[in-house]
Image (cartoon, rainbow, N blue to C red; front, side, top):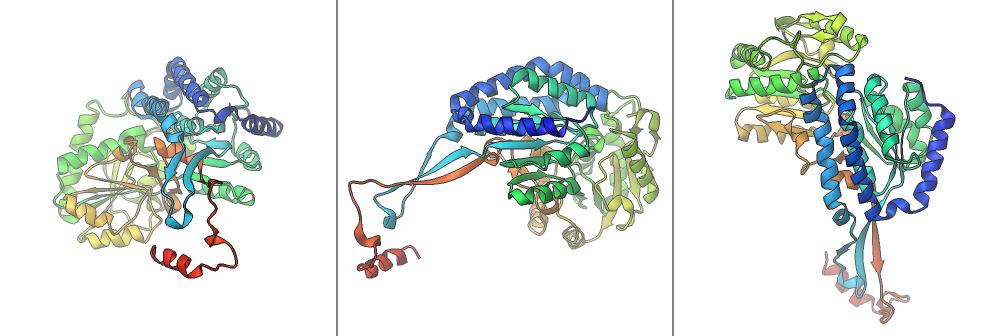
Length: 462
């Protein structure tokens, strides 16, 4: 993938700033027309995108549609139906001291934005934020990942075919290009990636005081308590870990198993994994491969951090790693330091839930948190920890509900999106007070002769 030049990047940024200044994107009907064009463009380019996902990641059409294309269709469809309502001026109550004025919230577009996406879900993690940018009335420069070159090229072709570049444009390249992009001022940077890339972006944009939405990652714990339904837990956990071959920012990263059920869970996991892949994963067209050799080598290196009790086979020629459980893992082992981002599952054990709370809260805040057991105990442990999102007796599914926010906290990110929150992420809520001219209340003016009355009015609110 050829790097976009710094001159071209500057041309695009200046062009989009000029286009936004023209006021074209502020018109709500125009935004909706662009969302409809977006939907038509995605339909036209759906097959090339799915073919490219297979080429880069060995991602089946079914998984590509469920975890990528279908989610984008859903976001676009809702935005078409609801953008007019989201953008409508909202009237708010005015206190007694402010009468006879009227108070409003005006949701206005932030302006020229930058959206940077990773390689693991290269379609939905680039295009879902774009839905928010379009519905809010922003322009957008899109930066896909160079690690999935086929997908990134199709995305560029689709965007060029669907939108004028002064409105939406794609920039391609490696970390050098990221650095060039971050030199420019934007009205919002929306970045999905690693915490290290998030820090680089924040540092570069700090001089502009640019607002940011950061969707990062982290080591998301998966707790299985002694009274969990082991069959169901094993099935849902195996599915969550095998989805995209574990290359998911909210994949369960490590297992915390109650000592009493550890061996039983391992056996249940074996059985449920075989149910998901009756012929194994090695030649399955439903099992995603590792994105590149360096990631493969890193993951294989983790296999020596414990005893393999399930899986462990791998083939570098095809970038395939079998779903693997590791027991006897030290909390200080390399596999427990960084987000795994692969189909390897280290096992820790606990006797009391306080051990889990102490362990999780002593580390960086994760993007997701999973608990299997009694619902009351799940709420209890959620109330003593923090994470971007969480599931009780499930994995992954909180990202699938557009009615709740998706986002990180602390090291796992800041800000959230999906549905109206995507619109709000790219908007500024502007406070406006409208005061009539037919009445001018003298109480507020110097020399404050009615201060006693004003004080009583203010004290009523205290």
